[in-house]
Length: 317
Image (cartoon, rainbow, N blue to C red):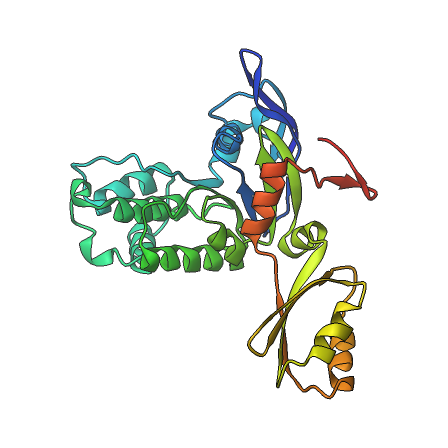
């Protein structure tokens, strides 16, 4: 659905985007992540045809962008971090304007449905100059969905929204994805990306460093797993036997909790439980602490680790 091949953008010899090759399948929600200045917005501007690549190719919905840009752009919806609005227009006038541009059928019904989804229906006649930033952001999302696009390109889509607004947009993204839309999201809110996305790509200094599902990405970065084991009573014998296992890299106690750092190559929970039972201990519960997307992102970008692979071998794209 979205594919780039060796996409590059240079400015006076500086590569803002460097040989970017990524793949987003139809119906995916794809999170595009990176620190400030990594090349995210430059990439999105090239996907939109606003910036011309120095070299490389862009394919959207199976067609090369530069060969038929107008036809392709009609099938894309865009939400940017900042909305450019006409302050003297009402929300209804603003949306009618874009609905006419896209020749939206039953436009009044479509506009009201979308405004209702983001809790703006009752103020559709209000001038946009009186809208807060969060309200403007939600209105931009409505505009992007008016013509029922096949692809949504979202650059910081929940910027300026309060928690209620973020949930409304999150629910709307999920609903549109369930209707078959492909969603490409660039955001600094990693918790939202983790909730929404099927797959993520991480870019740093213009280069794609990782592209995978969240679970695969975190698993590949984790040499160790954190386990919290609750027992009826901590005894010296339990601590001694667990500490003797080679797969236990660290053990700390707190109250009736054992905090273990163990190798991630295997699930050792059954072995740990058995060892405690053999020492006359009672296991009340074992919790596994998962690596978060934030942990993975920081590890990859701060250490500039490439996790791109072909046939199991790390490669540089």
